[in-house]
Image (cartoon, rainbow, N blue to C red):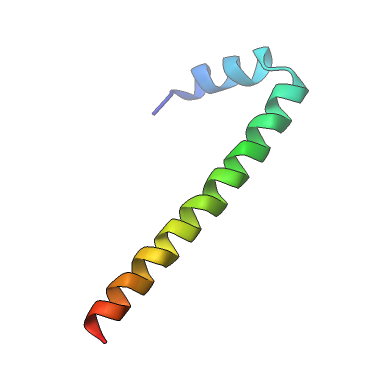
Length: 49
């Protein structure tokens, strides 16, 4: 986990474009992660049903 000072430095050095792209890819990553989780839960549900 980065310290607050490191995080502020990263924020200060990152351009707003990079920041926006990072936010978009983070959202996409979270959405994909949720799909994978849902699929795993379905598989487990199928096994226990």
